Amino acid sequence: MQLRIRLSIMMFLEYFIWGAWYVTVGTWLGVGLQFDGKSIGWIAGTTALGAIVSPLITGAIADRYFAAQKILGALHLVGGVLLFAAARQHSFVPVYVLLLAYCFCYMPTLALTNAICFRHIQNVQEQFTGIRVLGTLGWIVAGLLVGFAKIESTARPVELAAICSLIMAAYAFTLPDTPPQEHLSQFSLQSLFPRAVLHMLKKRDFAVFVVASFLICIPLQFYYAFTNLFLNEIGVANAAGKMTISQMSELFFMVTIPWFFRRLGVKYMLAAGMVAWTVRYLFFAFGNAQRGMWMLYIGLLLHGICYDFFFVSGQIYVDKSVPESIRAAAQGFITLATYGVGMLVGSSLSGYVVDAFRRQTGSVVTHQWREIWIIPALGSALVLAFFLPLFRGRRSGPELAEPARGSGGAIAMDIPA
Image (tube, rainbow, N blue to C red):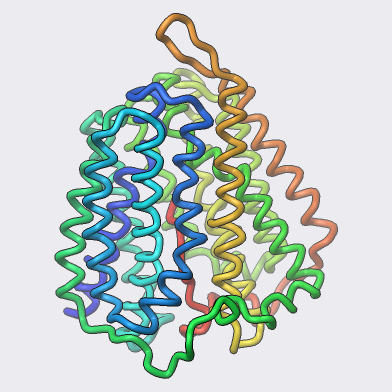
């Protein structure tokens, strides 16, 4: 129990940091610093670039040469300094460079915290969820704190994340020793994505799933990069606090996934996630801060279906579809395609779309949000139209009806938002 508490605190701090700065960074940049949509999109995409680089850091260094808890502490220490520096900048280039460097430090820590848990708990399937849920709680607490403090348009959330990052750095060095795995062979790019993983792309269902996962991340990034700015601009009070409804929804649907799997099967679980993204953006398009506030609430509540039904179900699908010997590599490949390349493309395109509907009257900047949200809604619907006729899948079955078992299917990186 003492070990589980220590690991739970680690998860709480890990995701509190991310939730403190990332949710409201678009509002700080757009309102506080007057950055345009393209700049906000590129900065939001720093996490995607970090996701692309992080397997190299964890695979080449942490897994082979240093104890995981020491790498975790060092990365958060450097990350805290970078966040403090970023919070004091006022132009695009230094903000972008500092936050990009920070994401190169932070994104590998997602896999490191998971790795530390997997090495020290006895029953991954039974115990990990109870530990990992503290991460989502940390994200919720960060959002509530930032929202109630009314600091969304300032650099204060970035400074808050910096302080917590330094606390996490100190705490990491107290965690149980997690030495490198001595049996690992010399690092190479092929060890990250062996040919057997790429060979899986010859199977139609797996290839369709990979392409759909990549494509859905493009409209998805509209939500991460611009929802907080949107809610603040249309006059929603305590926007960051209200956005934590999304994580609460995620917690609820996370525990219902096995029940839905048994009744829907993998194909319609994935399809339901895509439908939810489409419906969410339509509610955002036609909702408002007055009589249409109920539409915005529903849009936020749909996050549990949006995220859990597609991404968590997708991770389970990968775990059950590939040979056990390449499961971890296959999860890393999907992470690269989605949280890496997909979100990077989405960050860029979303910025251009937001700028296309940007209006400025004197010093006041507004956006035509209905037109903006219609575009990712259509994008999500097109991905669904591509996926449904091409992905065969099974309606049900024991191999796709339960969450992944064992460390072979461990999720290398997850985004709880």
